[in-house]
Image (cartoon, rainbow, N blue to C red; front, side):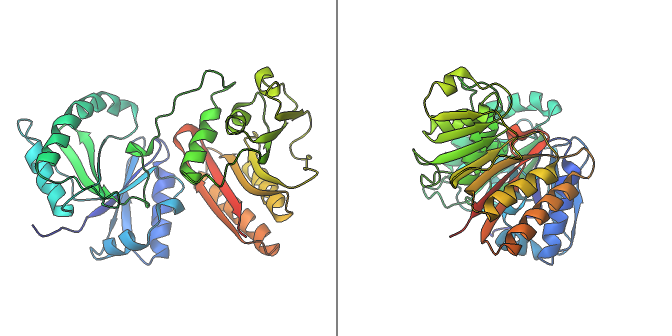
Length: 356
Protein backbone atom coordinates (compact mmCIF):
# COMPACT_ATOMS: atom_id res chain seq x y z
CA UNK A 1 0.00 0.00 0.00
CA UNK A 2 1.28 3.46 -0.90
CA UNK A 3 1.88 5.65 2.12
CA UNK A 4 -0.38 8.64 2.48
CA UNK A 5 0.74 12.09 3.62
CA UNK A 6 -1.02 13.23 6.79
CA UNK A 7 -3.60 15.94 6.23
CA UNK A 8 -3.37 18.01 9.41
CA UNK A 9 -1.54 18.56 12.66
CA UNK A 10 -3.49 17.69 15.81
CA UNK A 11 -2.40 19.23 19.10
CA UNK A 12 -3.66 18.17 22.52
CA UNK A 13 -3.98 21.06 24.97
CA UNK A 14 -5.59 21.92 28.28
CA UNK A 15 -9.31 22.63 27.93
CA UNK A 16 -9.76 26.39 27.89
CA UNK A 17 -6.37 27.04 26.28
CA UNK A 18 -7.38 26.29 22.68
CA UNK A 19 -7.02 29.94 21.66
CA UNK A 20 -3.44 30.12 22.95
CA UNK A 21 -2.52 26.79 21.36
CA UNK A 22 -4.00 27.89 18.01
CA UNK A 23 -2.20 31.25 18.07
CA UNK A 24 1.09 29.54 18.85
CA UNK A 25 0.91 26.95 16.06
CA UNK A 26 -0.08 29.66 13.58
CA UNK A 27 2.99 31.68 14.57
CA UNK A 28 5.33 28.67 14.49
CA UNK A 29 4.03 27.63 11.07
CA UNK A 30 4.49 31.14 9.69
CA UNK A 31 8.10 31.11 10.91
CA UNK A 32 8.52 28.01 8.72
CA UNK A 33 6.78 29.85 5.84
CA UNK A 34 3.78 27.52 6.10
CA UNK A 35 0.36 29.10 5.74
CA UNK A 36 -2.75 27.36 7.01
CA UNK A 37 -5.70 27.59 9.34
CA UNK A 38 -6.35 26.41 12.89
CA UNK A 39 -9.72 24.88 13.73
CA UNK A 40 -10.99 24.39 17.27
CA UNK A 41 -13.80 25.23 19.65
CA UNK A 42 -13.60 26.48 23.24
CA UNK A 43 -13.27 23.68 25.77
CA UNK A 44 -12.52 20.99 23.18
CA UNK A 45 -9.03 20.22 24.50
CA UNK A 46 -7.43 20.06 21.06
CA UNK A 47 -6.52 22.13 18.01
CA UNK A 48 -6.38 21.04 14.37
CA UNK A 49 -3.98 22.93 12.07
CA UNK A 50 -4.24 22.33 8.33
CA UNK A 51 -1.81 23.87 5.79
CA UNK A 52 -3.30 25.34 2.63
CA UNK A 53 -0.70 23.45 0.59
CA UNK A 54 -0.56 19.68 1.15
CA UNK A 55 3.20 19.56 0.54
CA UNK A 56 3.74 21.84 3.54
CA UNK A 57 2.89 18.93 5.83
CA UNK A 58 6.36 17.60 4.99
CA UNK A 59 7.87 20.91 6.15
CA UNK A 60 6.03 20.71 9.46
CA UNK A 61 6.98 17.05 9.89
CA UNK A 62 10.67 17.85 9.34
CA UNK A 63 11.13 21.28 10.91
CA UNK A 64 8.45 21.81 13.57
CA UNK A 65 9.76 20.94 17.03
CA UNK A 66 7.38 19.83 19.77
CA UNK A 67 9.70 21.32 22.40
CA UNK A 68 9.09 24.78 20.90
CA UNK A 69 5.34 24.59 21.52
CA UNK A 70 4.35 25.78 24.98
CA UNK A 71 0.61 25.10 25.01
CA UNK A 72 0.57 21.74 23.17
CA UNK A 73 0.72 18.60 25.34
CA UNK A 74 1.02 16.26 22.39
CA UNK A 75 1.69 16.67 18.66
CA UNK A 76 0.55 14.23 16.00
CA UNK A 77 0.10 14.22 12.26
CA UNK A 78 -3.34 12.94 11.26
CA UNK A 79 -5.34 11.80 8.27
CA UNK A 80 -8.75 13.32 7.47
CA UNK A 81 -11.36 12.48 10.08
CA UNK A 82 -12.87 8.98 9.81
CA UNK A 83 -16.61 9.27 10.42
CA UNK A 84 -19.51 6.85 10.81
CA UNK A 85 -17.31 3.82 11.45
CA UNK A 86 -19.46 0.71 11.72
CA UNK A 87 -19.91 -0.36 15.35
CA UNK A 88 -19.82 -3.98 14.15
CA UNK A 89 -16.30 -3.60 12.70
CA UNK A 90 -14.27 -0.66 13.88
CA UNK A 91 -10.92 -2.45 13.59
CA UNK A 92 -10.73 -2.99 9.80
CA UNK A 93 -11.05 0.66 8.67
CA UNK A 94 -8.73 1.83 11.44
CA UNK A 95 -6.08 -0.75 10.51
CA UNK A 96 -6.38 0.23 6.86
CA UNK A 97 -5.90 3.91 7.71
CA UNK A 98 -2.91 3.07 9.92
CA UNK A 99 -1.28 1.05 7.11
CA UNK A 100 -1.55 4.06 4.82
CA UNK A 101 0.64 6.05 7.25
CA UNK A 102 3.42 3.52 7.97
CA UNK A 103 4.15 -0.19 7.75
CA UNK A 104 5.00 -0.61 11.44
CA UNK A 105 4.69 1.34 14.67
CA UNK A 106 6.68 1.26 17.88
CA UNK A 107 3.66 1.93 20.10
CA UNK A 108 -0.08 2.46 20.12
CA UNK A 109 -1.81 5.39 21.83
CA UNK A 110 -5.61 5.37 22.04
CA UNK A 111 -6.71 8.82 23.13
CA UNK A 112 -9.49 11.28 23.73
CA UNK A 113 -9.41 14.95 24.59
CA UNK A 114 -8.75 15.69 28.27
CA UNK A 115 -12.21 17.12 28.93
CA UNK A 116 -15.10 16.29 31.25
CA UNK A 117 -17.35 15.38 28.33
CA UNK A 118 -14.77 12.85 27.07
CA UNK A 119 -14.50 10.98 30.38
CA UNK A 120 -17.36 8.63 29.50
CA UNK A 121 -15.79 7.99 26.08
CA UNK A 122 -12.48 7.03 27.73
CA UNK A 123 -14.18 3.95 29.21
CA UNK A 124 -14.98 2.71 25.69
CA UNK A 125 -11.44 3.53 24.52
CA UNK A 126 -9.87 1.46 27.29
CA UNK A 127 -12.05 -1.54 26.36
CA UNK A 128 -11.21 -1.14 22.67
CA UNK A 129 -7.47 -0.94 23.33
CA UNK A 130 -6.93 -4.68 23.86
CA UNK A 131 -8.70 -5.97 20.73
CA UNK A 132 -7.09 -3.35 18.49
CA UNK A 133 -3.61 -3.96 19.89
CA UNK A 134 -4.01 -7.69 19.23
CA UNK A 135 -5.21 -6.95 15.70
CA UNK A 136 -2.11 -4.84 15.06
CA UNK A 137 0.10 -7.63 16.36
CA UNK A 138 -1.62 -10.22 14.19
CA UNK A 139 -1.15 -7.93 11.18
CA UNK A 140 2.58 -7.62 11.86
CA UNK A 141 2.32 -3.87 12.40
CA UNK A 142 4.23 -3.64 15.69
CA UNK A 143 7.91 -2.76 15.22
CA UNK A 144 10.77 -3.71 17.51
CA UNK A 145 12.66 -0.47 16.84
CA UNK A 146 11.83 2.33 19.33
CA UNK A 147 12.57 4.82 16.52
CA UNK A 148 9.51 3.75 14.53
CA UNK A 149 6.56 6.16 14.68
CA UNK A 150 3.80 5.75 17.23
CA UNK A 151 0.25 5.17 16.07
CA UNK A 152 -2.44 7.41 17.57
CA UNK A 153 -6.20 6.91 17.45
CA UNK A 154 -7.86 10.11 18.69
CA UNK A 155 -11.54 9.41 19.37
CA UNK A 156 -14.11 12.18 18.99
CA UNK A 157 -16.77 9.58 19.74
CA UNK A 158 -16.99 5.80 19.36
CA UNK A 159 -17.45 6.00 15.56
CA UNK A 160 -15.45 9.17 14.77
CA UNK A 161 -11.66 8.97 14.90
CA UNK A 162 -8.54 10.81 13.80
CA UNK A 163 -5.81 8.33 12.82
CA UNK A 164 -2.31 9.77 13.05
CA UNK A 165 1.27 9.27 14.05
CA UNK A 166 3.92 10.91 16.19
CA UNK A 167 7.70 10.66 16.10
CA UNK A 168 9.60 9.56 19.23
CA UNK A 169 11.86 12.42 20.25
CA UNK A 170 9.55 15.01 18.70
CA UNK A 171 6.40 14.42 20.74
CA UNK A 172 5.35 13.56 24.26
CA UNK A 173 6.20 10.00 25.37
CA UNK A 174 2.87 9.76 27.25
CA UNK A 175 -0.65 9.02 26.05
CA UNK A 176 -2.48 12.35 25.64
CA UNK A 177 0.74 14.00 26.85
CA UNK A 178 -0.17 13.14 30.45
CA UNK A 179 2.27 11.32 32.77
CA UNK A 180 0.44 9.17 35.30
CA UNK A 181 2.05 10.33 38.55
CA UNK A 182 1.03 9.24 42.01
CA UNK A 183 1.00 11.78 44.80
CA UNK A 184 3.56 10.68 47.41
CA UNK A 185 2.02 10.55 50.88
CA UNK A 186 5.08 12.06 52.57
CA UNK A 187 5.11 15.14 50.31
CA UNK A 188 3.75 18.22 52.08
CA UNK A 189 1.70 19.55 49.13
CA UNK A 190 0.34 18.48 45.75
CA UNK A 191 2.55 21.08 44.08
CA UNK A 192 5.28 18.46 44.29
CA UNK A 193 3.76 16.82 41.19
CA UNK A 194 4.46 19.96 39.15
CA UNK A 195 8.20 19.67 39.73
CA UNK A 196 8.23 15.89 39.28
CA UNK A 197 6.55 16.25 35.89
CA UNK A 198 8.91 19.08 34.95
CA UNK A 199 11.94 16.91 35.71
CA UNK A 200 10.48 14.09 33.62
CA UNK A 201 9.58 16.32 30.69
CA UNK A 202 12.62 18.58 30.47
CA UNK A 203 15.37 16.26 31.72
CA UNK A 204 14.08 12.82 30.79
CA UNK A 205 16.48 10.09 31.82
CA UNK A 206 19.59 12.31 31.89
CA UNK A 207 21.36 11.43 35.18
CA UNK A 208 23.87 14.30 34.88
CA UNK A 209 21.36 17.05 35.62
CA UNK A 210 20.27 15.86 39.07
CA UNK A 211 23.08 14.25 41.04
CA UNK A 212 23.28 13.63 44.80
CA UNK A 213 25.16 16.37 46.58
CA UNK A 214 24.24 19.11 44.12
CA UNK A 215 23.13 22.40 45.68
CA UNK A 216 19.73 23.96 45.01
CA UNK A 217 17.72 26.99 46.08
CA UNK A 218 13.91 26.80 46.29
CA UNK A 219 12.31 30.25 46.21
CA UNK A 220 8.80 30.34 47.65
CA UNK A 221 9.43 26.92 49.15
CA UNK A 222 6.79 26.60 51.93
CA UNK A 223 5.44 24.15 52.82
CA UNK A 224 7.98 22.19 50.80
CA UNK A 225 6.36 20.43 47.83
CA UNK A 226 9.21 21.33 45.46
CA UNK A 227 11.90 20.93 48.12
CA UNK A 228 10.59 17.37 48.68
CA UNK A 229 11.47 16.45 45.08
CA UNK A 230 15.00 17.81 45.52
CA UNK A 231 15.53 16.05 48.84
CA UNK A 232 14.24 12.82 47.29
CA UNK A 233 17.16 13.09 44.86
CA UNK A 234 19.63 13.91 47.68
CA UNK A 235 20.28 17.51 46.69
CA UNK A 236 21.21 19.99 49.42
CA UNK A 237 18.51 22.64 49.51
CA UNK A 238 18.22 26.20 50.73
CA UNK A 239 14.47 26.71 51.15
CA UNK A 240 13.58 30.41 51.02
CA UNK A 241 10.15 31.43 52.31
CA UNK A 242 8.66 33.41 55.19
CA UNK A 243 6.13 30.62 55.71
CA UNK A 244 6.66 27.40 57.71
CA UNK A 245 8.35 24.36 56.17
CA UNK A 246 7.44 20.69 56.62
CA UNK A 247 9.23 19.37 59.72
CA UNK A 248 10.27 16.08 58.11
CA UNK A 249 12.13 17.97 55.40
CA UNK A 250 14.00 20.06 57.96
CA UNK A 251 14.87 16.88 59.86
CA UNK A 252 16.45 15.41 56.72
CA UNK A 253 19.68 17.26 57.50
CA UNK A 254 20.10 18.60 53.94
CA UNK A 255 17.56 21.44 54.05
CA UNK A 256 18.28 24.94 55.37
CA UNK A 257 15.20 27.13 55.83
CA UNK A 258 15.68 30.89 55.47
CA UNK A 259 12.75 33.13 56.37
CA UNK A 260 13.41 35.92 53.92
CA UNK A 261 12.07 37.52 50.73
CA UNK A 262 12.70 35.37 47.65
CA UNK A 263 13.30 38.46 45.53
CA UNK A 264 16.03 39.72 47.87
CA UNK A 265 17.86 36.48 48.59
CA UNK A 266 21.07 35.67 46.71
CA UNK A 267 23.26 32.63 47.46
CA UNK A 268 26.74 33.28 48.93
CA UNK A 269 28.14 30.86 46.33
CA UNK A 270 26.80 29.66 42.97
CA UNK A 271 24.39 26.71 43.10
CA UNK A 272 23.52 24.03 40.58
CA UNK A 273 19.77 24.60 40.62
CA UNK A 274 17.22 27.34 41.16
CA UNK A 275 13.57 26.29 41.42
CA UNK A 276 10.81 28.83 41.91
CA UNK A 277 7.05 28.54 42.38
CA UNK A 278 6.33 31.95 43.89
CA UNK A 279 2.91 33.53 43.37
CA UNK A 280 3.93 36.73 41.61
CA UNK A 281 3.58 38.59 38.32
CA UNK A 282 5.11 36.48 35.52
CA UNK A 283 7.40 39.26 34.31
CA UNK A 284 8.94 39.67 37.78
CA UNK A 285 9.69 35.94 37.98
CA UNK A 286 11.17 35.98 34.46
CA UNK A 287 13.45 38.90 35.32
CA UNK A 288 14.48 37.28 38.60
CA UNK A 289 15.43 33.97 36.99
CA UNK A 290 17.30 35.71 34.17
CA UNK A 291 19.32 37.72 36.72
CA UNK A 292 20.30 34.58 38.64
CA UNK A 293 21.63 32.97 35.49
CA UNK A 294 23.22 36.13 34.06
CA UNK A 295 25.12 36.84 37.29
CA UNK A 296 26.26 33.25 37.73
CA UNK A 297 24.16 32.42 40.80
CA UNK A 298 22.86 29.19 39.26
CA UNK A 299 23.45 26.90 36.30
CA UNK A 300 19.90 25.66 35.71
CA UNK A 301 16.44 26.87 36.67
CA UNK A 302 12.91 25.48 36.68
CA UNK A 303 10.19 28.02 37.39
CA UNK A 304 6.45 28.47 37.08
CA UNK A 305 4.68 31.49 35.65
CA UNK A 306 1.11 32.27 36.76
CA UNK A 307 -0.35 33.62 33.52
CA UNK A 308 -3.15 36.21 33.54
CA UNK A 309 -6.56 35.13 32.28
CA UNK A 310 -6.35 37.51 29.32
CA UNK A 311 -3.46 37.59 26.83
CA UNK A 312 -1.82 34.43 28.18
CA UNK A 313 0.02 33.72 24.94
CA UNK A 314 1.23 37.32 24.75
CA UNK A 315 2.44 37.19 28.37
CA UNK A 316 4.41 34.01 27.69
CA UNK A 317 6.11 35.68 24.72
CA UNK A 318 6.83 38.76 26.84
CA UNK A 319 8.51 36.68 29.54
CA UNK A 320 10.55 34.78 26.96
CA UNK A 321 11.67 38.07 25.47
CA UNK A 322 12.68 39.49 28.87
CA UNK A 323 14.87 36.46 29.59
CA UNK A 324 16.43 36.34 26.13
CA UNK A 325 17.32 40.04 26.15
CA UNK A 326 18.86 39.86 29.65
CA UNK A 327 21.05 36.86 28.82
CA UNK A 328 21.99 38.10 25.35
CA UNK A 329 23.07 41.43 26.88
CA UNK A 330 25.18 39.49 29.42
CA UNK A 331 26.61 37.39 26.55
CA UNK A 332 25.52 34.19 28.31
CA UNK A 333 24.80 31.18 26.07
CA UNK A 334 21.58 29.48 27.17
CA UNK A 335 18.65 27.27 26.26
CA UNK A 336 15.11 28.24 27.24
CA UNK A 337 11.90 26.21 26.94
CA UNK A 338 8.33 26.72 28.13
CA UNK A 339 5.65 24.06 28.47
CA UNK A 340 2.20 23.96 29.98
CA UNK A 341 2.42 20.65 31.80
CA UNK A 342 -0.55 18.59 32.95
CA UNK A 343 -0.08 19.45 36.64
CA UNK A 344 0.41 23.17 35.90
CA UNK A 345 -3.30 23.87 35.51
CA UNK A 346 -3.43 27.60 34.68
CA UNK A 347 0.36 28.01 34.77
CA UNK A 348 3.31 27.23 32.53
CA UNK A 349 6.75 25.90 33.48
CA UNK A 350 10.00 27.35 32.21
CA UNK A 351 13.32 25.52 31.97
CA UNK A 352 16.45 27.64 31.60
CA UNK A 353 19.98 26.24 31.42
CA UNK A 354 23.30 28.01 31.06
CA UNK A 355 25.35 26.39 28.29
CA UNK A 356 29.07 25.85 28.74
